[in-house]
Image (cartoon, rainbow, N blue to C red; front, side, top):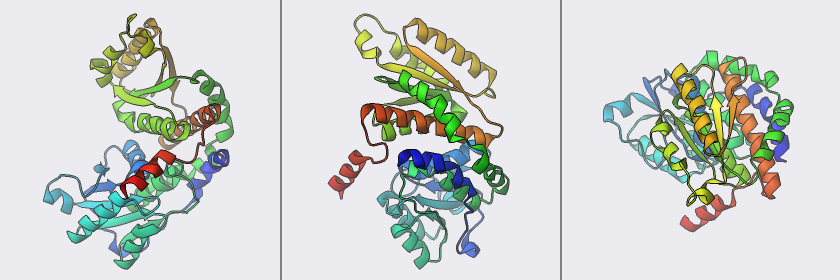
Length: 322
């Protein structure tokens, strides 16, 4: 059951990722992570946690349009939870043909076969028959291991005991009721964009509802004006509910913008909730926030009578294009 997966989520931080073929794991100045959907989210979180790292996340076929020098100075990590994502397989073949430095993160499939066949360094994640968006502890730790970020990897060990899904569920249950029959709009600072994006994804995939995300300060220069409603547009606006992810360590000017935007939107008649981050370490703050999103989106899935686990439209789309 989905709820059991959430209850078991802290156990992912007890998993010790092991690099196979470590002698072929190159140290490079830059990193390119190729992944689609939930399979690149662990890398997004590593980038959020360690902003000084040079990580380019590529979410399409082939390789990013960067210079040949940049490609040669990059470790290209191919990440696919299933191991069968066609865009990632294509990127592997493109990079392998060019003789670039590769590493693989997967649970199996074609990607694992390619890594084994070609002696590529790889980490095999536990295959638990869950959606990639629910395996972020595993993928986060796998990417950290490949990048030899031992300090942050060690910090995340503590989450096995510190994350408390039960207490987070209590917070989430009441909040999910506020979002019933609403379209969530999630805002954060630029540095926390990955979290806002993942919140959006969890509403999309778990709750099966539309949701949107944007960042301060950019949204104050454009998107905000789209909510300047009048009698003619009121019916368009009434479904939106705003969620601001507030990081107390954000630039004070961003915090000022959060307060001002909340005030303006409320004057326009919108419901706005500000959710402060909570936790003792950066990794704990990140995964507390994501567990909260998981439980809120699960509550909405139950309210709408939707299966929180499966993504039938995605599977239907794959069949159409295969």
